[in-house]
Amino acid sequence: MHKNSTDHVAFLLTMQNNFVNHDSTLSHSEKSEMMMKKLLYIMMVMTPLMTKADPWSTPTRIQWLYPTNKGLVFGTQDYANQTFSSCDAGKRFIIPRTHDNYAVMSSTMIAAFMADKKIKMNIDGEQFNQPVCEPSINRFLVFK
Image (tube, rainbow, N blue to C red; front, top):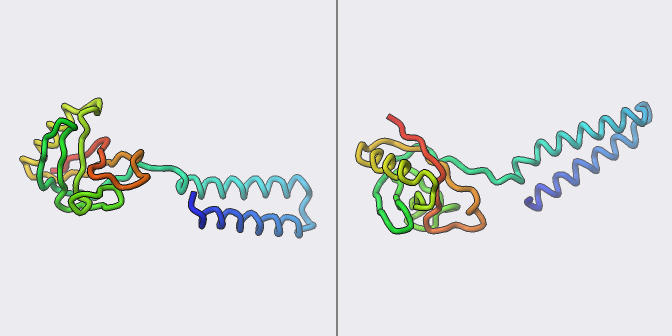
């Protein structure tokens, strides 16, 4: 979790405690219930910040394909993200040969490339500690 997120939660909890402790019209059970609701709200707000999601690209065409012994490497035409991909200005990705559905995914990617169709791809979220040259994708959509 980011430091700013932690500071934000601490601030909210401090404000909540000050509010609950200074409101003498509430019973102890009402204060406890209010505190639980606030904590639940904070958890719901903070959960997406702590979870690593697998991001989706914007729709893009495939610029080039490069079959290798590691998998099908490809470059995107209309999508770049240097947060994930450190090569080719953030436009290089891979369908790893170890993917359970490699044959179907790679043949579908080749068909999309040959037909000049746009794709929208899901990037593997387990690699986000630092950019890699060719981040792997989990799945993708092909558009008409």
